[in-house]
Amino acid sequence: MIRSITVFFSLAFLCLSAVAQKAIVAGPMPGHVELRTAKIWLQFRDNIKEAAIHYRSKAASKLLTKKIQLEGGEFNTAEVTITGLEPSTDYIYYITAGAGKNYLDSGAFSTQTIWQFRNPPPDFSFLAGSCTYFNEMQYDRPGAPYGQDSTIFNMMAKEKSAFMLWLGDNWYTRYPDFHSEWGLNYRPSRDRQMPVLQKFLKSMSHYGIWDDHDYGPNDADKSYVLKEASRRTFMKFWANPGYGFNGQGIYTMFNYNDADFFLLDDRWWRSSDRMKDSVNGQPNPEKTMFGKDQVDWLKNALLFSKANNFTKFRVIVTGSQVLNQLTRFDSFNHFPVEYEELMRFIEDNKINGVVFITGDRHHSEVLRLDRKNAYTLYDVTVSPLTSRVAKTQGAEVNNPDRVGPEMAEQNYGRFSVSGEANERRLTVEFIGLKGDVLFTWSVKASELMNE
Ligand SMILES: [Fe+2]
Image 1 (cartoon, helix red, strand yellow):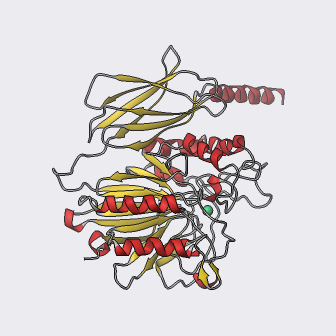
Image 2 (image 1 turned 120 degrees about the vertical axis):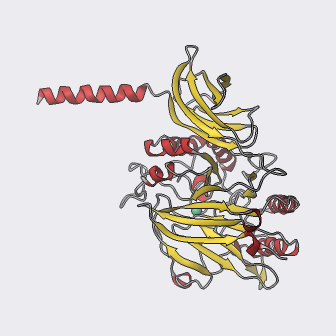
Image 3 (image 1 turned 180 degrees about the horizontal axis):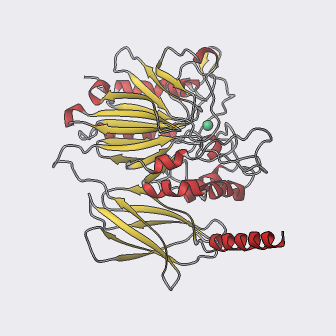
């Protein structure tokens, strides 16, 4: 007995010292990588004060070094932007800490291709998913665990995709989390350190938007008193191209080959879900989901994108579903004035190539919206990664707008954009927990055109 106790404590000590030696607690995770620059996100143990990234192109022998600015404090995240890179180039890097330059970890990334005016658009793929819940029993609701099998991230780590779109509810703040800025930081800090995530974080670029649970409490809206703190947390844990403007919201966009991605914020300006959709029989203009500033930005960004003939797809990414006409849960059509305004804008201005990608619902599906005077719009919902599954109820069960099945199981979306310049196609495969393809849907850019 004594011997086994001794063995136990020695093993525990070995494990503890292995953990104690880990200077990088999460990441490295590439964020926004474009033609000439790359953002790498990391989280260090709180006593690490000094770190550096050393990098070179695979073909070069000269190693360049850049100091990493650490946030410091308990959560000690860092984002380093490497500049002066060459397009279409594979880079390798490694991270060191302290003056002694102790090796910590290594990784690789590739810059985007400069193909415009030179070559046909290159094929590429990306992943998307929403609703990630890791259990922490002492703070979770009693009863059956809400978080499910997280090995889905092992499969995702093996994908040869350029990037992952985290569609919101990327972590779930709990009751003990969302009453303080510390709590808002604690939740992603704990989740990001999950061993099952590490390979995946390193394997490709990551872009995030938020939905209610990673913004604040369930169904949180613009009244959430800690929203400014929540935005600081968001900025601390993602390495996106930008985070709204003038300190407001987290919306941004980026381009990848012949697709533009508009990452929207459906919380910062969101009216309460309980605000009436209509008043005196008229749609309520006070009820907004994206808010005036963001809608104005999106309209201009879509027009700017339209002017670029190289861009075939305009992917609008947001947490709440956009085209679901039947749900009583979160969907853009419960904000009728703003919904009509955006739909009319897309139609009147003949914005081609629009596809919505959404999350939140705890099931996946593709919804269509046939329009009288324009091409059919699609809303591709991908959910959940690890949180509990939810089947549709009531009128939604047999939603006539659904293309293909309702997938009420853990899954992620494997998207690809491929084909000859005039035959570009966006395809999504919904991948289940065992790697099985649950459903494949695809649309040609030429089907998303007005003329
Ligand atoms: Fe949500």
